[in-house]
Length: 459
Image (tube, rainbow, N blue to C red):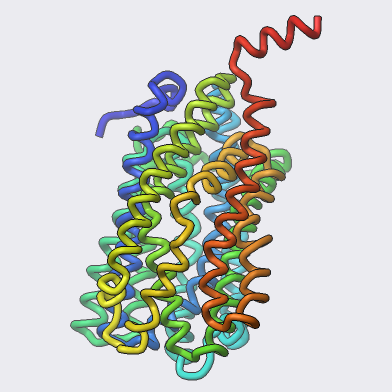
């Protein structure tokens, strides 16, 4: 694979960069999403629909802890992109070292707490009735591998911050393929049930870690794993924390959303309604892979050019990222609206779930064509290091709008109230994000000729 220098982020055309950065990210997310979807298909067909619900209960807990690595990775990667753009290699190296230390410390503590309080956390997230026992089996085994998953998430974001999306793509593909192979062997051949599904997942995390570790030891990386950079630096930690808290808060809200959704749906329709949500949740991850890929590809481009003080390139990257992501979202929307029954039938043969899920899925995806603006808008503020607006805009969809809606609407519309909360939250949060993004562009990303006129008027 040819070596790519991060300086290309400030020189090549924005369209070309978006394709180069987004295509590998999209492929990586696609494979990862296919892994989650196929994993759910295997579990649903080889173990049962209750097992799907059990995994859905465990995911928000394990992924919240793993999201510590993602938060530290994205927060630090914003700093690394801007540092490389400003030609400050030493700051980039120190940031990377601090990211590793912080991730190991925090995830180890949280995993220990998660294992100790397992019997309380599982029911709280909807693991009740027949769901509890399979969820507990899956939970304990998966949690052992969560610190490694966190380091993978950290490493993947740093690789992308260096402007090397192809390596980041491979880092996402390796565990996905490994997990599917292990699923088949452990569940279908050795008949290990939920334990087999859990060990397949944990083992795939380790394989991915070995690849990322090799990358940073090789000549492909501009950043190196140097022990003296592991010492914690308070200034760097504050900036990583401020920017990373955006991602962590988003994942915390996602976990709270799962908690509320699983419990609300369990009360309204029992285990089958939780299974319906589990299938829709997998489709949300899978179907949005191209939009999320564009968002991931956009981050290092915006961060690097902002650090290099090239506002015209930052503006162009915002506009083109929103355009490309919106077109892809429209394609996803069309497929979901036309083929919902065919999609659901792949996951389960349970007749009740087959009848209930397609209509619910249509509601959930109803506003997907406009979601690109919300995702790119909130990602932009994180890319340029503005933690407060990034945090607030990130929380608008699920935190400020979706959670209140699912607490209120089901009281009047029952289970339908849960599903219509999705498009309502999407529309409102997109309007809010669009307003603040437009204001930011007008004030801080003026074209050069406009800046010169404004400067001369002040004089």
